[in-house]
Length: 316
Image (cartoon, rainbow, N blue to C red; front, top):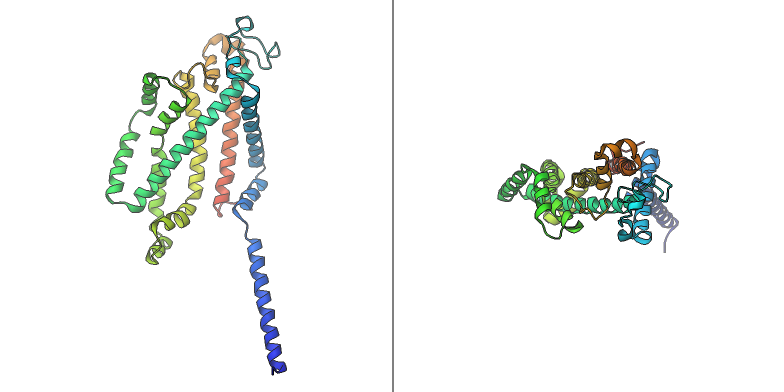
């Protein structure tokens, strides 16, 4: 038979347990998830939020229009009677020397440039992160061999080699161009990740995990990579903008995409003609402004993502 004192003790224990559970639930609700942290960071940075909205809107407009409303063959069809037609004279943004729509080339060219920049960024970042983490985490002869290969590729005149490959490769297309660029542009990411991981593997949390017998795979994916996530995000952002600029620059020089494939670099290259630069601004100006806007948007978005991944840099 339980006495009144026993009943009171049980009631007190139950009350304490309920309070502890409530405190734990409140704590969990107060800890923001990764998505909420990113959302809050964009809400605090109006420039980043505007850049994200504008960038997503541009991507949707470009890809939907290029996929469903435009035909490459029709856009690139030569119409000599419409040579250098001014804006609103049968074309929204005018025409080039072949009477081809500037707006159509702008949309399809932007899609091609974004696809190439994104693809090269993903491929080179994946290779660079994997190589950088492995060689710095394990070290030894693996690191020595890999670093000699990276040093050799880094000292090569990359742009000239890409131009040579573009010239000699038969049936050259977008996929070939992506692969050629990816072969040479992963070394910078590998060096960056290697330097950061070398400083991280000496920290106490890595040594403690190794002492506890945690496997290398779990240490890398659960502890190491999350701690260098801000560096990876910044690298991805700058890499995307950089690869977009490299593709545009090579195409501008005539060694990027084939002439029959619309590209922002081809539109900008029309400005090399003095009469076009001076009197026919509608041929090259839209592509230049679009690249400028995309680069600025990527920069602001990358800064916000960087702050979201590093608690010391978050706004507020």
